[in-house]
Amino acid sequence: MTHPRFPLGEYIRRNAGLPHDLAQSGMRGEIRSVRAPLRRPPLPDPEELARRIARRHGVVPERVFLTHGATEANTLVLLHLARRHAGRAGGRPRVRVRLPEYPPLLDTARFAGFRTISEVGEVELTLLSNPSNPEGMLLPSESVRALAERSRELLVDETFREFTSAPPLHDGGSAELWLTGTFTKAFGADDLRVGYAIAPEGQVESFRSVSWLLDGIPPPSISGALALDRHRPRILREVRERFVRNRRALVEVEPSAATIAAPVWFDRNVGTLGGDRLARAALRRGVLVCPGRFFGDPNGVRVCLTRSTFPADFAAYREVKAKLGLLR
Image (cartoon, rainbow, N blue to C red; front, top):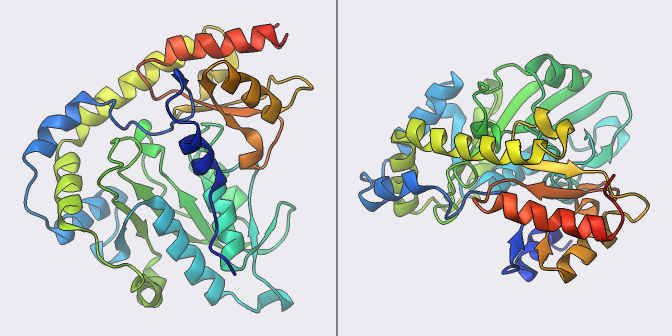
């Protein structure tokens, strides 16, 4: 079997450099307050970094596994769980997802051996991003637990949670809870490539049997992540202020977006045109958005609110929609 490919990332890279970029969901190059800490980072100490992550999540450090980002963390967890549940229910283990959903989660689950389903019933795994990517909605913990009913495991990618003041999820209800996160989104630390997975207490040792696939996080990345983590209140204050300003500009013309908690929004106002045709029309006019088919819903596009240029970029996007007759 060939390795999973992530066409969303390839699509963004292939069209990078357009005048109006509404496709980038990270804060790379956008945060002033990260510059000083990264100029003089502390000595690399992976144990301290794991302790700091564990303390925020209310778990022991042994449950924290450092990775090269959330995608790697999700991959390791999914490979572990696919092997753990192989052969149950007379076939491939089942994973329940809500669409639209972040493509690497879906693609990697299928690559690992899961069969994706959306209907109600018993499953081995419930999988979701929270806040959701591409919709930007934060599900309360009660709703997450309800989604995971009749599920043995629950994997929640909290990549976008740092854009909110919401606490980490602590309880998966009847399901064993796995959490993943990263420094590459809210902290704009794409170059550091540091993420993590938090395993349930009863599966720490068995998960360690797949974590050997990790080849170790480079010391400069550990140092950089520690520097950012030590300054997280100031950095996240700037990040959240940026998001709130951009959301305000969005809500002025799209009032329904007032409830998004992360800097992504799924625009379903595409008429009969569809997300792909709208995205292609936008490309021709120098505007980059992400077609919804990458997320399992072709009837929309994802718009990101991370850039300081968002008001002008979004205005250009609306001009495209106006010419296509998609504005009310």
